[in-house]
Length: 154
Image (tube, rainbow, N blue to C red; front, side, top):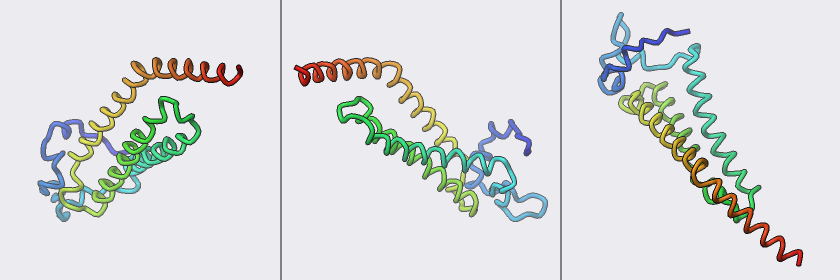
């Protein structure tokens, strides 16, 4: 397993590696060769798994929308959430692809950092909804559904 150098996280050149281009030009290697993620590394499979999970979750959210009543509170939320998750996964795959083919600028770790900030903001946004608003919305939904059922039975 590769060892993580925690000091790199404070180095601006590390985050802008694809832009600076000076890293990796050591020990006679061509510049930028260190940018490629080796397939025998656990990072390679972790990135693929994470990005694939985002895409799969986006697809599952979109398809699960068909199983909810059209008045259900989550019915309006699922398209936005599924779009965000699928976009996170696709952009992650694009970053990974650019990293593997060593495309300058588009393979910078700074984009991965922006993606991480995006994921954290998304999780906070969804979590806030489920903590603050969803209990009230589902209660109102169940109440209205109960009233409609009583009218049908009468």
